[in-house]
Image (cartoon, rainbow, N blue to C red; front, side, top):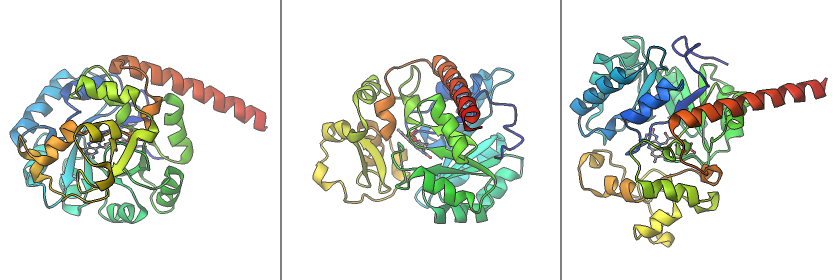
Length: 319
Ligand SMILES: Cc1cc2nc3c(=O)[nH]c(=O)nc-3n(C[C@H](O)[C@H](O)[C@H](O)COP(=O)(O)O)c2cc1C
């Protein structure tokens, strides 16, 4: 179990709020950090790099004295024309944690390390994890099967076990985490932090439409379809929204092109797709309300403590 000094004694719960395209905004980030978990957002949620700077200033202005650190997600892919400009802003603004997706590149890691920042990289297989470890990242985010967004297909037990064979730095585990006992379960498996996405969409203040949140409340795990048809990278979407957007469910194994540059245009297929086809993980079936972030974290905290007591009872029974 390894937590970097930056996070040691800074968190109320061992949780990072995952960055979510078109959902995570400064309100969500500051609410998470001010209630003791790491808040994050994808740089591409702002329309340009100056906008990214504005959001960072806005987030910092909204943080209370003992707030948890925040993170920015950069898509490291040749099709993202903003990568260098956004990275420059992260360095200039000394963003505490940079979460990289798709590519793990030593130059990006070195740039963030130059001011003492941390790089966490998300992975879905052992090979990706090995490459990211070679690039010198400080943490790996194991994105298991059933997660929202660009989910993996590996069982989380298998993914964590294999990554822990060669990686002893910070490990985060993602996929279907909605409750305090699931947060503790990630630690028992060998991870250090839980990485939560879908649960945070179904809360009061973020960039998601109300109809999106309502669909999450209605959906069950069986409604989640993992398909490369929307983004080019396999991602999890709710069947109801794919149908509403006119997708032919029989065609969903056809791969779309990967193009993060497309996300920058106000009207285009990729951004329109994520705006109208709503992503969520298989954890939807365990989400039943739309609390504020403060209420949710308070509840997670109580559930986490109850789960710890249960472990204590199990330990006594095992003696
Ligand atoms: C709507 C949505 C958008 C997402 N956008 C991104 C993104 O832009 N960058 C990224 O690294 N991960 C993205 N993800 C993945 C999350 O960061 C995280 O890995 C995932 O949500 C965790 O699984 P869970 O949703 O089951 O909790 C997205 C997930 C969702 C649900």
